[in-house]
Image (tube, rainbow, N blue to C red):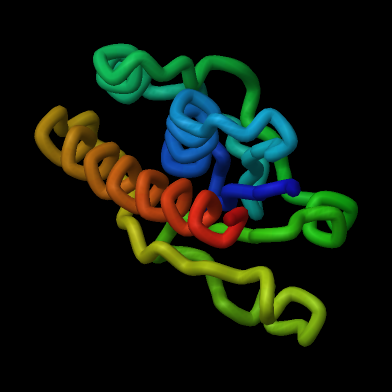
Amino acid sequence: MRILFVCKYNRFRSRVAKAYFNKIKRDKKIKAESAGIIKGQYPLSSVQVKIAKEYGLNINGRPKSLNVNQLNSADKIIVVADDIPKIIFNYSKFKDKLIIWRIGDEWNGNIKNNRRIIGQIIKNVERLVKELKKNEN
């Protein structure tokens, strides 16, 4: 199974979701990746990298942009954002794969807001892992 986490720039939200998913999943057959609908050009926020590390998550690396192959090969496409136009995924072949977690972004380096965002992502990922495990049985 392939899971694709998507946010706007692949700088924070989708990376956190991928990193946490890979940290807690048990099934080695499930592969997760992340991408942004727009390739992020800005350096990662040092505040976000630091907060992610507090949770044992590594979100370093270059942002990746979304491509058609990722969309087609994904069994689940999880939008970890509230700022992506739904029209991008408005194709019948994506309809049954698509899950949307409406999670806002943080641009000002506010530690409290970044922790809140990571908390939302963690809750959603934990719920996803439970659902996948339940469906596996």
